[in-house]
Image (cartoon, rainbow, N blue to C red; front, side, top):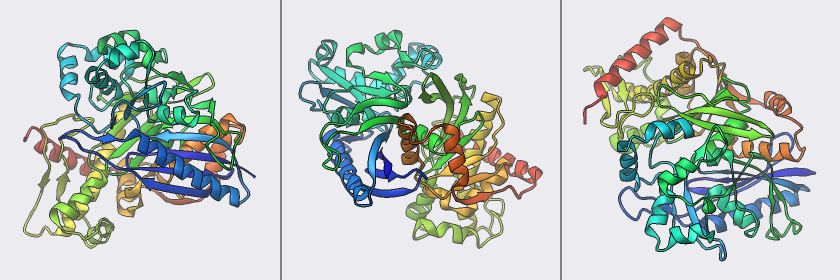
Length: 499
């Protein structure tokens, strides 16, 4: 029996999962790796440790699948986006630790670019804001701070890549230096209209083109693995690659414009498929490549909630009103509503659509009758309110009405949160039984390229047949939902500019 191996390389762990034709998990292995914090605002990974960890879990998962009588016919890769690696082409050794997407060391340089009036050009070409989050300024920092690095890069001696490129390089024993369009679109160096590296952006950041990987589609043959897997000495084709959030969008079968997914993790990442043309946001959302299959490219709008599940963690660790995060729903359900309490978790400022870094967290509407249960319920609702703001901004930007919201991530198991989300949006919220949609999306992309699945329509049908863990339909009258949303927006205004 044939199967697909998905490598899900995340920020804190590496996972490998094997899927059969029904999308069910046949085998899996996962292992965490070390996080480094050399200075305030800096976050690093050991790229060699990532490779060794990812290889180990892949070998373990393949062995499990083989024992069950399944052969791996293709590999898909989903990866933490924006994390930046620079390595020597001849030795394969990294020149420095990988700079993680969370790292803020290039914030000062980003401020210089903005002061130089470059942001309009950057937004038009890349769909991104100028921010230390993205890979381009991290690569510039490495070239500036490693002796002779820029000269060596210009001579073609060095290779840059996000983690997908780093894994592909090692899986193919250095034969393939490539990245897919979704990861390229997160670098600040890629033109989302021409689907190529942009010379003006490269000149702006003084990046030699010779250091950059070849850009490939999200589904299609990228390379063949070297003789590194004992169970498959002949090698396995790598045929699917996507950044983790785009992989989750694909794994949720959001193939039509207006379809969206929201990942409820520490923060929340929401992506809406906007079709075959990029949509420029008026609300400072990000415009990104969703995937490219054959000659067709789909784009998405992306927005982030800074404090999603982290809000519940604050109730646990900061206020101490719950012992573990899973206790929050029971506590919140002990009261019928918030009693007029709103919690605005702007602990690190407000993101889209407000973009106010000076905003600070606040709790409003407290009375003598307010209890920790009311605060807990307000915290749950705050996650839904923030996500609803992103949906409103996306619908306004794209001119497309949301048809349904597909959800995943740890906090999506909170039924109260999901129900309130459906009430605010006035549309169903679909929570799949298979929550590992990032790994599944990478598997779908890989399987399409080798005919394991014949079409996206087949995958859509497959997803429809799969058991939905729960579908949450709106129960709150639209007028009441609008009043609740208005109360939230007023609370947000009180939190702005309070730093």
